[in-house]
Amino acid sequence: MTWTHYIIESENNPQSKAKIHEVMHELDLLDIWRQQHPFDNRYSWRGPNHKQSRLDYFMITSDIEAFVVSSDIGISYRSDHSPVLINLRFSSQIRGKGTWKFNNSLLRETEFIDKVKGDIKTVIEEYESDPSMDIETEDKQFNISYQLLWDMIKMKVRGSAISFSSFQKKRRK
Image (cartoon, rainbow, N blue to C red; front, top):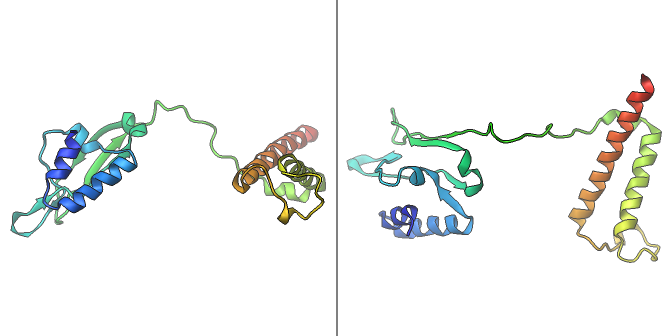
């Protein structure tokens, strides 16, 4: 039995706590504060008549557990809730160049538009279930999901846009 399991099952509202535990298990989440403070009794909520509870949690996946430097429950000031704090450090993670953004000015180039139309046609033909049938695009059946087909079209258009932009830049020099 984990400390998280013990703490959740032993608190006042067993049905709510059981549901939280169930969701944590289903989504493979962990309570990072409890992992880092297995024996501490700290509360994030204080009510009248000296009632207190840990209402606020940091539920994280194990994928980001290595990036957690610290977690804490702060001191409340003029509130019945205490702040919950988490300190993450992602500096060791290698980052890419960022997200790609489509250059809208390419839409003024008829050569580029023709290239994209050809790319879309090529991708559709590549993933058609029965290319011999001559029917409208809306009625065609594909051997991949529509989401994957859309992703393949976007990937092809992105490659063409990058290539075309690079070619234009070289031509201007």
